Each structure stands twice: as C-alpha cells, then as structure tokens.
Length: 346
Ligand code: AHR
Image 1 (cartoon, rainbow, N blue to C red):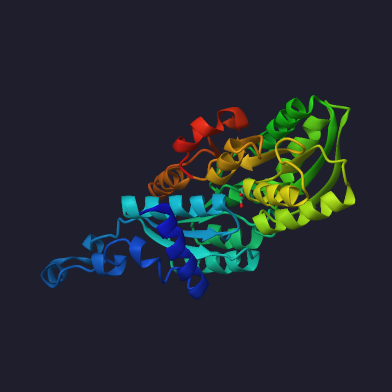
Image 2 (image 1 turned 90 degrees about the horizontal axis):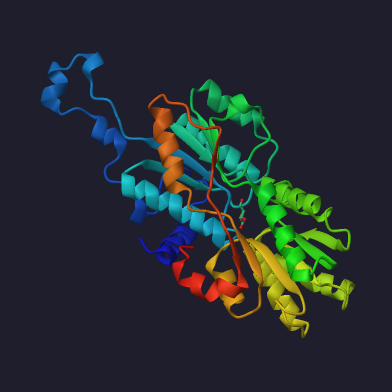
C-alpha cells in the first residue's frame, strides 16, 4: 500500500476509532480471515478429533501500542509496522495512543485480555511502565520495546529494537561544531519531556559539547517533536536572543522544519545565518537541505517492522532475542542532499 494513502486511512480510522484496540485494523490492511474462524475445525474432522489433536492457531498474533502521529518519522514507523504485518500475514491489533501514556497502558491491558502472542510498544515516556509490564509477564506475554526505551528492570521486556539516541546527540554536536567552526551559540528544541529519545539526545549533545569550550547552549525548550511547536518555540528564542543565535539543534526533523519557517519569518536565512542540525532523516529535511535551508540530519531509522515481526515470531517459537537490536544509520549533509533525496524511503 502506498505510504500517503495508508497514513490517510490510518488518520481517519485512528481518530474515529480511538482505543477500539484490536477490534479493527484499517480495512485495507486487515489480514485475511479472522483467526477464530480459521482455528475452527471442519464439522467432519471435529467429530473424529480428540481434544489434544484439535488444530492449533499457528498465526502470529501481535498487539502494537503506538505513541501517536506527532511526526513524519512516526507515520513512517506506523506504516512499516502495518505494511509488514499485511505482507507476512500477521494478525495485528494496532492502537494509536494519541500521545497519552494512559491510552498505551489501556491498550496493553486489552492485548493481554486478547491473549496475543507478543506485545510491541513504543513508550511515549520512559517511566511508569513497571506495573503493566509485570501484568504482561505474569500472563506469559513478552514485551518488545520499539524505538523508545522504558525505565524498567531488564526481566520485564524481551528486547529493545531501535537506535542509539545518545550517539545521535553526540553526532549532532560534532556536526554543529564543524558548521560553526567550533565557536557559537546554540538553541535546542527538545522532544517530548520524559521520552527516552529526548533525554538521550540532550545528554549526548551536551556531553559532546564539553569538548568545545567556545560553544554554548543559550536556551533549551520542548517542542514536543511537532513542527507547529518547533516553530512556536523558535519564534520565542529569536525574540529573546536577537542576533545571538548561530545554530539550532532540533531533536527531530519536524521541529527543525518548524524552526526554519520561524527563521525565515524573522527575515533571516536558515542554513546560512543560523545553521540547522536535526535528527531523523525524513524527506522534508532533505528537501530543505537541497534548498540550502538546513545543514545536517542524523538518521534515525523508523522502518522497524521487519525486525519487530522477526523478533515476535522468534519469541512465539520460544527463542530468546537480543536485548538490543540496533538500527543501522548514517549522517546526511546539505552537500549531498539533492543526490540523496531520490533514495529516501520515508
Ligand atoms: O522516538 C523517535 C522519535 O519520535 C523521532 O525522532 C521523532 O520524530 C518521533 O516522534
């Protein structure tokens, strides 16, 4: 299914059917035949079959508690999960948490009642998961963390699939140092407060900056990983520090794109007067780099569907999975953006 079409379908279904967890997947991604019907034996066979010989439902049944739709990156991750499930015929129960941890927790509880084989969750924030993860463990259902971490003891989840957010922050700082000639003032647009992606990207960046005594962060504020808030916060920074800002570091591309709008509205040239470094690698930032309005993006791969369902199948088969399945990622700069753009998948 085409990416834009699927996101449009999803937006409609998720908003209308918020928290109808597991009842309905978007029509176009529904896997063939409900598992209960498939498992029912044909009448003749039923008469002969002893209980222990009854056909077993071998189809992988997975619950996925997504965060929401805050960014282009998140849409790409959702697409990857839904599309892979459709391709390989998984019975997927998908929930959009609409940015709220309580919705994600409710979804996980519903998945437990539905006795899914494996639960995937992208935790909106890091803390507050212990109780519900313990409930899943007690029910014998493994939890796989997808893209963001949760601060829980290691025995409460089977594995984490995703990026090294600290390394991403460090790489962003090194790139900013090169752009600014190791000297200058930076403003930071942070992700959602309490999210591992925000905490670690801040830690990585500030730690690396210690190697550059002439570079400093003038101000940091959350833009909640959205373009609209990124723009709003950047407008406030530009008013508070007129003529002082040399670079903006955004924890994701969507906020950087919002910041670029704010910089232009202020009569300045993004990418030249104020350098722009961000994380994700979405098409929009490549277009901005190709136009000279952004400088660097540190890639964070959202296409985790294949790795996630492989891990889920392994867990269903009784295998253990690696505690951290890392994504392969690169760093992309303005100089090659035009050539890179046609190859971008999200
Ligand atoms: O957890 C990954 C982050 O969440 C991405 O960088 C951001 O765009 C998303 O919303």
